[in-house]
Image (tube, rainbow, N blue to C red; front, top):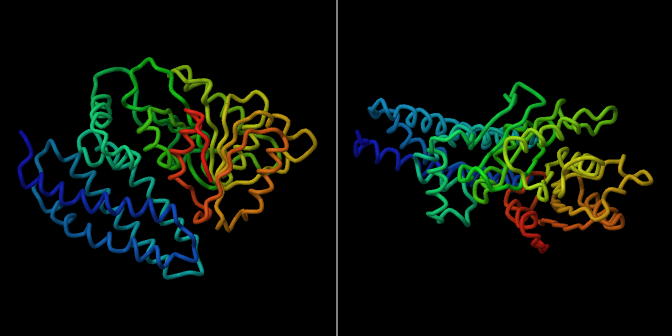
Length: 370
């Protein structure tokens, strides 16, 4: 039976403030700079109240059995979003402990993971998981829905290989639902920051891969961070094997295999991506530094001719902008093909809005402008 008018109204009245609030969360995450926390909290705070009323109405409504999954997901996502907003606002009132700001925003990945299975059933959700410039593409939305619902053994969508959040050393993978089962796809391998997890970092790239038909793999380091602290490199060979595992199941465009990462993941992007025998054709480190191992004589030999897209924030408080200038010049002297993007309002956080430019550069060779 089709859903009742009351259920349809309840879904619409909850989805609008929920998706608008999640959009604000993404904006706050991108612009997080601890000295501006109170201002960011003011932008985010209204979302909790805007969700509360429609959430209660949805909880009180009698849903048909065949829509219980949808009801439970929407309620869960809405509650998690309210908790995220509340935690961020509370953290903003305690400026002496900025780490709590980052902890609050880490919930954003789990919120998206919970919401995503509703994309084939709820068009506004599907459009939200696209790049903003592509949300009005009706044909793309239709192809994504058809691909997600088709009865085929293509294994598309969000997949995980030994990558539960209490595990290390696995990876998550996004395979675009609109993939036709034959065409080679570019592969983005995206490395989380220190103490992060690949299952969470997937959501920094999913909307871009989904919009453009690009495979996205997000590994999890074997330890708390990547092999940048000295000693044995325990991550390089597993990364190479992960790429080969994915390429054995899906046709990877071997001329477009991007290694990218944030913070420690960016530092390891330099270190691992400039190592002989690795499959990465392009590098795109964000908010990281050149590893000291690369500064020994001959350490940058593999950089000659390598396409490298560097992103750094002028407000970065962990790795000051001078470190990026040093890396840029060292790489250029070594013969790398460097695109350098210095972003005036970026602090030490991942610039998701830069992903479309990175993919233009990867896929089409388009040069970004500063």
